[in-house]
Length: 157
Image: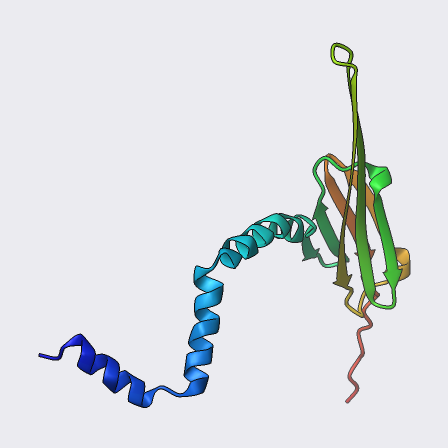
């Protein structure tokens, strides 16, 4: 049975200066007060990274290419649709100003928040991008593109 002193001495023979440095760095970031601060920063910024993603679904029928975007609680005036080459970009800008007045304590507070979410979708080459139609109803944005006409080619003998 080995004792702890023999294990430590055998480990010291295989340790290199690079290993010691890497272990020190690892220990610093996992056991120091800095770890708590880094976690708090991650927790603070994490929700904003995931809130700005638009839920988009694409569908095709025989005659149309359809983009569906769920935008619950968004007003039509907050939505912008832009086309460039073979891409459509949907952008939602949400601004909110909240003012509260407490007459008992004569306190006034005003807060402002702004969020922007954007998503670009590639459009297939077989649709007429200039003929798109968009409508927004009950929190669902629908963008419809008619497909280009197919040509049947007759094969001769």
